Structure formats: structure tokens, C-alpha cells
Image (cartoon, rainbow, N blue to C red; front, side, top):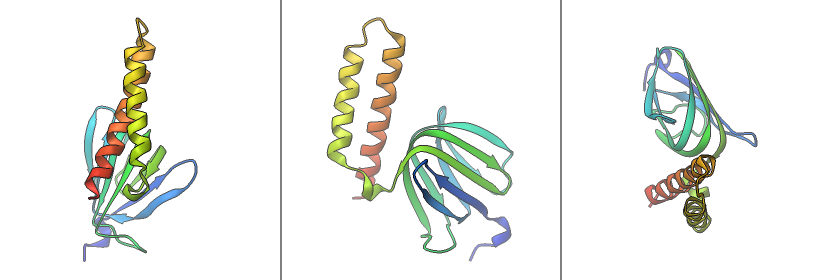
Length: 144
């Protein structure tokens, strides 16, 4: 058993629910600029989340497996030396992902990309939709 004094308190919440709240030894996060890993004692940080997987390692507490994976779509993360708070606009467990719907979202994103014309804002929105759909499909593929 890991030393509880070197555990992070991790909380993953969306506007609708709390998906995860327990201690962990490490957390991998998809930030807007790439993946990062947080360990106990990390320097304070506030970062924007991208679309991808949050992986919680060494979870302890009620109903917490050794490793937990959640697909998140955008939001923010606050890192303090002893805790990580993930505020995601949307988060799903792998088994909650609707693959058919994610494929439709990917197609919609590609359609938006093709119809964006000269609008930088339209391209950015299309990339946002595509990234979210691709991350959901990757998470769903991992569960098999």
C-alpha cells in the first residue's frame, strides 16, 4: 500500500456530476498544449484542459481501482502540491461513450472544416469538434 502522506487528493467534476473523488499517486491530464503528469508535491498550476483522457494511477478510497480512465472534453485543472481539481465541461467513463454518436460528431467536424471558407473562427470550432470526437473514439477503443 502506498504511503497515504504522499497521495494526491483528486477530484473530477462536470456541471452535472462528480465522476471521481479519491486519493491517487499520479494523474495524467490532457492540457491544451499536450499531456502532463502530476505527482504529489507538484508546483501550483492552473491549466486549460484539452480533449483526451484523464488517467488516475494508484487510486485509493471507496470503489477506486488501481487505475481509472475518464474521457474529458475541455475545461480547467487546478494543481496544488497535495490535490488536483479537474473541472471538465464534459467527462465520460469509457463504457459511457456512444461510438456511433462520436463517429457522427467526427463527420460533422470534418463537414464544418470543409465549409469554413475564410473564417478562422469556423476552422477553430471545427478543430474543436474533431479533437473531441477523436478523443472519445480513442478512449472507446482502449476499453476493448
